[in-house]
Each structure stands twice: as structure tokens, then as C-alpha cells.
View (cartoon, rainbow, N blue to C red):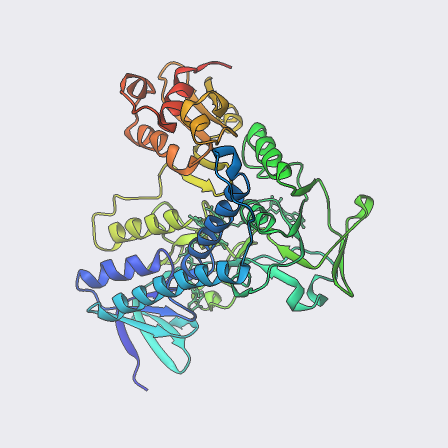
Length: 462
Ligand SMILES: Cc1cc2nc3c(=O)[nH]c(=O)nc-3n(C[C@H](O)[C@H](O)[C@H](O)COP(=O)(O)OP(=O)(O)OC[C@H]3O[C@@H](n4cnc5c(N)ncnc54)[C@H](O)[C@@H]3O)c2cc1C
Ligand SMILES: NC(=O)c1ccc[n+]([C@@H]2O[C@H](COP(=O)([O-])OP(=O)(O)OC[C@H]3O[C@@H](n4cnc5c(N)ncnc54)[C@H](O)[C@@H]3O)[C@@H](O)[C@H]2O)c1
């Protein structure tokens, strides 16, 4: 079979690969986008899209149970988990279908199905790629191969019956709610999933080896998240090290050393991610990934091999859809533009629990570590008129600013719609504006935005 000769090959139709392929092909370059599974990557197929759809169902169940607080009688709340999951999977199929159609309609773009591996270089420097029995020759290659659930070194984990072991990739196939689940790991995936499954009726325990949940956050944020989960009946064990796992008649037993044992029908492993770079033929072009499979890049997403770029979750740093998507703009600037756009950017993210955590920039602890003299402002949601009116008074909004310039260094909106509320601070930070811009603005009443402004108004030496 003759080799497919193109200008750019992109491995992985994920959140960086798809928009980059469209942009390059739209500008007239010949592009091959190689995908071994469904286009859309983790976000569309088992990550953001279905998890947020499922979480929406769990929020409704939780609110319906509290309906009398709003003066509404809901005599009985029943969860049809199979229908919840059908709804989530329906959204995946819809998004996937739209994506496949738009890729097929794109001129200059060829979607190649299969697992791609690098296989050295031609005499003229072009990269050789193998996909099944097809060979591709490309001047430049972008790796966007994403991540998978990392397996922690817990003895016996690999010998558990596969149907008892859940992770961020296979949860989407479930039709039945597990009776009881132990989540190994107390990070983003566990927090979001544990709250949702508890709300559907599962007995849930989170086992976190570190001292607290979401340990990249300020301690008060971790503590409030823990309180919120425990108030709904999620059991939390921090500082607990799982040494061994074994099957039981009805599920799984986890040995926590001095912490005793835990039993559940299922174990959900959410202890971080590992980059999909181990079967990519990187050695054939002289590249070696890091300990978690990550690929080292500079601010222009260039690896140390000229012509070879890496984007999305595999490049280390924030592992989010919006950062992967922004990577495509960095690469578009490198490949088609003047190269001025880089990964020097202000990083926002959210944890979609209830209350939601919207975050941008540094935590208070990080700002102090970085040597800033900080001002801190807080607004408890119990003092927000809007939060009281809508019955969502858990949490707080916290702003960290630099003394003197009064520029925002970071913010945490742990409140209803925290991922939306924090956008106010994202814009301020990107504009390089002092918080006084916000204080001078007229905000709409009654809104949660007013609470953000009140947090900024409360800034003081801390
Ligand atoms: C449960 C869950 C919930 C999440 N929720 C959110 C959220 O709410 N918000 C958010 O911002 N982020 C969320 N994320 C993270 C988000 O999904 C990722 O950060 C994002 O998808 C990363 O995009 P990417 O392009 O790096 O990789 P991916 O989207 O994973 O795409 C990589 C693609 O490469 C393909 N591939 C890999 N190796 C090869 C190969 N050798 N040949 C061909 N194809 C290959 C894979 O099949 C995959 O399609 C979530 C993740 C999970 C697991
Ligand atoms: N809302 C979102 O944007 C969203 C949602 C889901 C996932 N994601 C992305 O997916 C990534 C992965 O999420 P994650 O939750 O798997 O990882 P994580 O890194 O957020 O959390 C993993 C946790 O597991 C703990 N841990 C590690 N080994 C352990 C062990 N043996 N026993 C007990 N605890 C252990 C760690 O201390 C850590 O707290 C996140 O970094 C995030 O970027 C994002």
C-alpha cells in the first residue's frame, strides 16, 4: 500500500487534536487525524459530557428530597439509574455523531482509524507513522493521546473480578447502581462521582492516602468539601493507605493496615491519571516520557525533537478540556501564525460537586509560598441574599489579592454555580485589573455575583 503523504499528522482526536486538525485543514494544509477509539477523547466519551449529565440528575434527586424547604411536596423520590445512564450515554452519542459528521465534511482532513505508532524517520526527515498496515509520512507530528486511570500499587488489585472494579473509563457502561462503593483517591473524579452516586442511593466511602480531600486547595476549601459530603452520608477516610485488596463473596475487601478493613460491592479507582504514551514508538525518534508517561514540552508545546509537538493532558500541567482546547490555539500560532501564543496562561478549573468549586490562579497558601504579601477577602454564602433565596447557603467565596497593586492572585468560589461565579475573577485577572474595577462596577441584584464583589470588598491583610 502506498504511504499517505501529508503535512501534519495528529495522533489522538481529543480536545486539542480535533480543533487543531480543523484549523490546519481549514487553512489549506493536508492533515491526517488518527484515532483508535471514538473521536472526542475522554471529555466527550466518558469524561466531562456524561459525568456532568449524570451529576445533573443527581442534583435534581437531592433537590427533590429537600423540596419541602421550598414549600413543594414531592411525596417520593425514586431514582431510575438505568434511565440516568441512558440520558448520559445519549448525550455522548449525540456529541460523537456531530463530531464525526463535521470531521467527515472537512476538506483537506483525513480521519484515519486505528492505533498510531511512530516508526523512525525517512531520509528527508519526515516522520514515519504506522496505523495498522497503513504508513503515513508527515513533516510534523502532534501527539494528543490523553490519559487513562493510573493503577496504584495495591496488592491484589489486578486479581479482583473486573466487574467489581470501576474506573473513569468504564463507569459509563454501567446500567445498575452499585450497592456500595469504596472510592480509592479523594481528588476531582472521586469527589464528583462519590457525591452523585450517594445521591442515587449507594453507600459510599472515600479512601484518600493524603491528609485531606482535594489537597491542592486551601485547607478551608478541603474542609468545607468534606463537610458537605459527610452531611449527605458519604464516609471519608483521609490518611488511609490501602495495602491490599481481595475479592469477597459479595464484592471487595480493602485492607488499610492500622485503619482496619473496608468492604463494598465495588471499588472505584480514582488515584490520578497516566499518559497514553507507552505504546507510541517514542524511542524510534529519540524521546523518553516521564514517570507518569508525560511528555516534556516548552511553552510552545515543542518537544525536544524538532517537528514533534505534544498537547493536552500528556504535556503535564492542568489536565482539563479547556487547557487542551487552548493548546490547539498555541499550536495554531506555532504552525500557522507568528508563534506568539504560548502556554503562559492563567489557569481556571472547577470541581462539579455541590457546592461547586470554581477556581482560578493561586490558593492563599501558594501565593504566600511564592513570596507575595497577600490580602484575603471572604464572603460566607449564608450572608448572600441570593444564596438564601435559592436555598444554597453552603460554602464561601474567597479572593486572594496582592497588597499594593490590589491585583487578584487567585480566587475560590465554593458555592452554587461556583464554576460560573469564578469567571468574574478570571476576567479581572486576564485584564490585569485591580479588584477596584470590580468594586466600582454596578452588579445586578440579587445575584451570586454580588457575593463575589462582597468578598473583594472584604479584602484585608491576613
Ligand atoms: C470522568 C472524567 C470527568 C472529567 N470532567 C472534566 C470536566 O468537567 N472539565 C474538564 O475541563 N475536564 C474534565 N475531564 C478531563 C478532560 O476529559 C481531559 O482533560 C481532556 O479530555 C483532555 O483532552 P486531550 O486532548 O488531552 O485527551 P483526550 O480527550 O483523552 O483524547 C486523546 C485521544 O487520543 C486517542 N489515542 C490515544 N493513543 C492513541 C494512539 N496511539 N493512536 C490513535 N489514537 C490514540 C484516544 O483514544 C483519545 O481519543 C474529565 C475527565 C474524566 C476522566
Ligand atoms: N471537573 C473537572 O475539571 C474534572 C473532573 C474529573 C477529572 N478531571 C481531571 O482528571 C484528573 C484525574 O482525576 P483524579 O481524581 O483521578 O486524580 P487527582 O490527582 O485529582 O486525585 C487523585 C487522588 O488520589 C490520591 N491517591 C493516590 N494514590 C492513592 C492510593 N493508593 N490510595 C488512596 N488515595 C490515593 C491522591 O492523593 C489524590 O488526592 C484531574 O487531575 C483532572 O484534571 C477534571
